[in-house]
Structures are given as C-alpha cells and as structure tokens.
Amino acid sequence: MREIDGGSGGGQILRTALALSMLTDTPVRLTDVRGSRSTPGLRPQHLAGVRVAEAVSDASVSGAEVGATELTFAPDEVTGGSYQFDIGTAGSVTLLFETLLPLATALDEPLSLSATGGTDVNWSPSMAYYERVKLPLLARFGLDAEVTLHRSGFYPAGGGRATLRLGPSSLSRVDLTDRGPLDLVVVHSKASTSLENKSVATRQADAATESLSERDVTHAVEEPAYVPATSSGSALLLEARYRESLAGFDALGERGKSSEAVAEEAVAAFEAFESTTAAVDVHLADQLVVLLALGGGRVRIPRMTSHVRTNLDVVEAFGGSVTCIDAADGTVLVEVVDRIE
Image 1 (cartoon, rainbow, N blue to C red):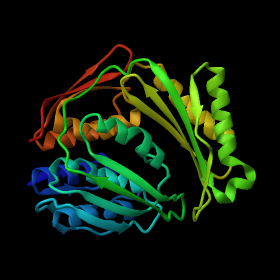
Image 2: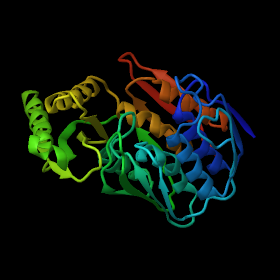
Image 3: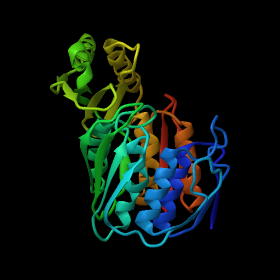
C-alpha cells in the first residue's frame, strides 16, 4: 500500500493519488488530507471524486466522509459503462473529470460520466477550456476523450451538467517543448440569461477583442452566448492557437466585477504567457503531469507551481521518475525518466 501525506496540498493530491491507484491497481492511504487548508479534510467536491472513483473501480474505501483527514482506497478493476453523479454543490465538474481522465489508458470499453455541479467556477478549468484547449491538445497524444455541456452552472447554486466520455486509449510520447508561432486567438464569451439585459457576454467579448486589437493580435470571436443557469454568472475564454500547441486563459464574472475587468484579466494572463517560452499554460502544466508519467515525454511549463510539485511527488510515490530543469527565462522543462507501468 502506498502511503501519501496529504498535508502539503489540497484536492490535487487526492485526485492524482486516486487516478494512479486505479491505474496501477495499488491501494493507497492518504493522511492529513488537506491539512494545510483553513478547512482541513474532505469537502463535498472531494468526496464526490472519491465516490466516482469507488464506483468505476469497485474499490473498498474507508474514511469517505466530509471532514475526514485520512482515507484508504483499494481499487479493483476499472470498468467502463455509464455513471452519473451529483456533486450537490457548485463543486467543479471539470475537477471531478480530472480523476477519471487518465483511466482512458486502462479501459477495454468506453466510459461516460454525467456530472451535476459547477461547470464554470473558481479554482478550476472552465468547461470551455476543457472543450477547446485541454482535450483537443491531449487528443494529439492519443487520449480519446470528449466533453458535452448540457447546462451551465455558476457559483453558488451550481446546477450545471456535463458528460465526459472516455474511449480506450494508448498514449504516445508527449513532446511539448516549443509552442511555435501564434496563429490565432479565439474569444469565447457567455453569461446567464439573467444578465442578457446588461449585455454582459457581449461586453466581455467586445472588451477582449478591443484589447487584443490594441496589441495587434490576430483574433476571431465566437458569437457571445446567453445560457440558462440557476445562478447568475459569466465566463470568458481566450483560446490561443499556436502552431505546435494550444493554451487557454479564462476569467469569471462576479458581483462587483465589470465585464471589462473580466476581459482584462483574461488578456493579462495571455500576455504573461506570451512573455515566456512555455509550450503549455500554467493550468495545463499541473494537469499534464500524470499523463506525461504514463506515456513518457517532456513538456516546457511556464514555472514550477505548488500544484505541479504536488503532482510530481505523487507520481514518484507510485514509481515514476521525473527531472525538472530550470531555464534562464523562468520556464521549467519537465521530463519523464521512468514511466509508471
């Protein structure tokens, strides 16, 4: 059984440990789960990940309750099929998908998960980012995955619903060290129908395109969308298409934050990325580590973050070996020495 100290991080340690436990058929015990957080232990969104992992791998689990700081997870065989889960809060649907995504490499038949919760909420990839950036990029390396958004869900009520479909996959070596020249930035903007009278989605898109034009960035705009949602909210994604890679920069609207401020937040993140030689954005960097450890390869990330370091530690606990080489411009080359078998 693998022993992992969860005190140094948050839900990322849990998601990665569960995924690798299922893929290697190795029981894992996590202690001091989220011990460094202001509210230690499992929260509802983390418990949702445990329950989904339990279902798809017929695992034996102890400690699966809100507030628990120790969890033992012993998986059986991962099986495909159709699963449904309601997080019960505005907990992130895309982070729930993160636990399952690597399992495509172990499937003999398709697996789908329909989840209800927050589709566009803080501290997680937006649904547009998942659909437009992450999954298309990973498809280049053999991952068969697609996501369908049925209803958007914003904080605090959530109520969004999306389905992740995974097909049996064989990963090729990942080599993302040079993103190449920028070809196009596509602006995706949406808001709940409750904000249509204030033209929120349109204003977000207009402000983003104006800012990109001022910077002479070639761009295109998808028609701003107004979508049914239980709670009011908005989201903006800048999808940056490079010759050899994809990157995404999103921002969320909230009470007291203007549409123009939402746009500037996304543009500022894009500009910060442009000033580096990284091949993937900072959010994809930590999410790539597990798939990198499975398929082998290397990737240049914008910087070493706590999430990347956390994932590297868990990968090494399961037998993987990774080197990190700092470059003069602050980027980091992450390269797998020994894959997880």
